[in-house]
Length: 43
Image (cartoon, rainbow, N blue to C red; front, top):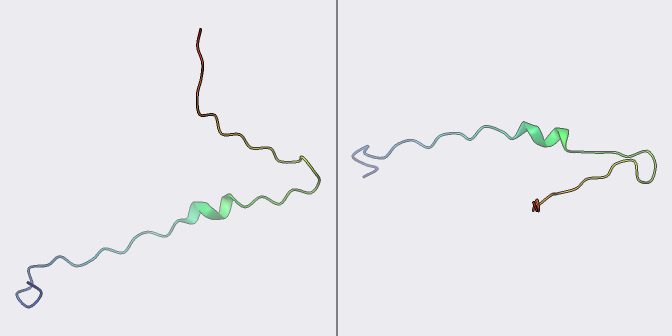
């Protein structure tokens, strides 16, 4: 298939530039707190 040029060329993936904003450098203890809420209980 490659010799007959039936294969598509591979696309370049865009770089993940949002990772540079995830780096946190706290200056004191408990300066940054993060939570991940998995469930919301409703009554």
